[in-house]
Image (cartoon, rainbow, N blue to C red; front, side):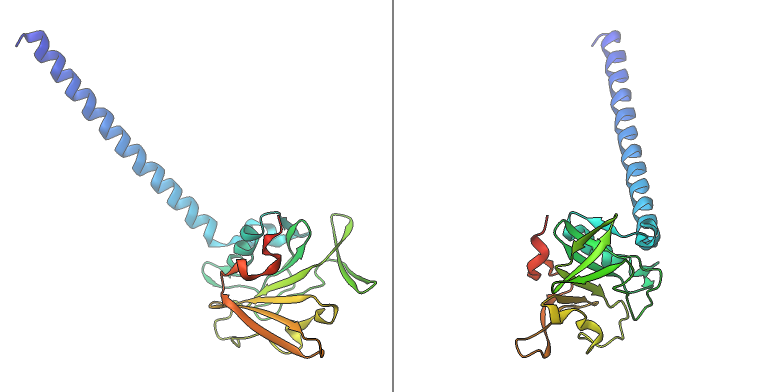
Length: 199
């Protein structure tokens, strides 16, 4: 083998080692950066959305439902109940400023009843509410909808869905006007909510 061939092979090997090392270092750096971003994002989701001041509309209902739940916690500890309204354009999460760990306000934005329908004012316009959903982040809360409290506007035929750590409930009034509920499945069984398909 010629000396020039040996030098070329040595240079080529060195170049390959440098490229491999650089790729591994970059991959590790990217992973660490992504991991740190994820930790910061998960730390306090409610603050990331300015506590839903003025209401935040999610056209992607599934994404909205995930935020609704995650924003009920601060650094993985119980923070506040959050409440969302199903509307024609998606899921509208209401401001949680006056919510507590055991209650959420349906009147955080201006509402109106008209001709047997429930409306909420968002960005200057009243839009019809098709359903309500809220979270129960307290792991010790009753494992079912609370009588009276979780049946607001059910007299209009509006269903009030409840998410806790394990369950997803559907609370409504039956044809006799009685408060009833059924378990739809685990908390993340969003596809069991008839309004889930809103896009």
